[in-house]
Image 1 (cartoon, one colour):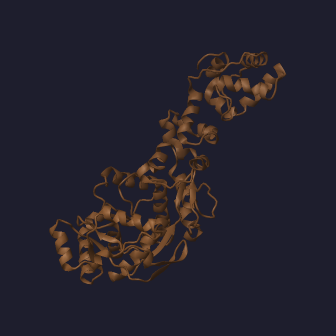
Image 2 (cartoon, one colour; image 1 turned 60 degrees about the horizontal axis):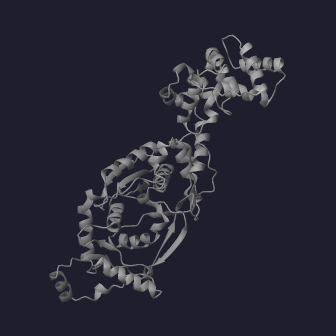
Image 3 (cartoon, rainbow, N blue to C red; image 1 turned 30 degrees about the vertical axis):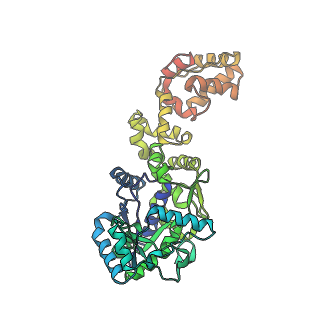
Length: 451
């Protein structure tokens, strides 16, 4: 059996990190087992589905490096969903219901007020043929529910172990809306069964759906896939993530300068017992992937933790890995390697290197402190500025000479020099920056001139 997982987003909003985590886990599980991942665009909600959201899903998956092996849209298979509906009607598992949304909402409220679970009471089963005919003559159109068997449904969950759900705690799911459109429940079961999906890995909010869907698989004469339900992913404040409110959209992480490999490493191990560390590539994540490591408790996605990981991830990049973006920031090709060596330990995003290239190439407005010690250090620095060419030994030799002339050392020596040369109190090692700043700019800055 070839393992086939699927990621099935609805194109009703931008992918947030919870969606991305589900996609990534499905991709990793498939790759770890020599299988494939299917992308199924669940666009049965025609009113809210949008083409720009479909494009966004594809762009986000490509950016993360986990494009699907096959893809389709659910609306392309409407004929297969309709055929399954006819089969279920023929075998007596579907029944028409005529309640309006307002009536159903009122019943649920009454049940909750009485301390009972808000489960559909199957009132429509008591309607006679004459009752149904009368309702339809009045213009009512039925929605169709799948009649669940009154039994316990059990499965061995890939994440949570054995799960038992009794049908008595569930409402008979609606499979066809009053407008004749298939619902998620019917479409997803038909598509999973007919396209060979072997493993369904999704969020824990689908557990009750799974119990009903297993019965639907059986009613259609199909074997159910293996199921795994990941614990929820929460934001840093402990709230659930939602596309509708734009929670931590993947596109925002990309725009914020996060590296796709850092995001993948973060999501792949968030909620597991594994340490979240930088990785050499997605193959490393595949090799170490084990879905049983995911815990049952909700995990929190803290952007600050991702930023820290991103900083560690980019420090693993060599000059070739950042040549294109650095050249785009204005760094000359021949200086990419020494510049990256100088600044990579002082940035959290590659784009932040642009600030330090500005320090190298200017213009920079130097910060000149007027206290006596600083003025003495800067005067000695101007007098002893060594001739070029400069290398990484220049800084230490030059500052030793300044110390010998002034008797100043430590912070009193290095602070005024750094402020004058870089206009910043902290930053990359000056022994590495100084040769790229060069003698002309250094001399001008030591004199308080923009350079």
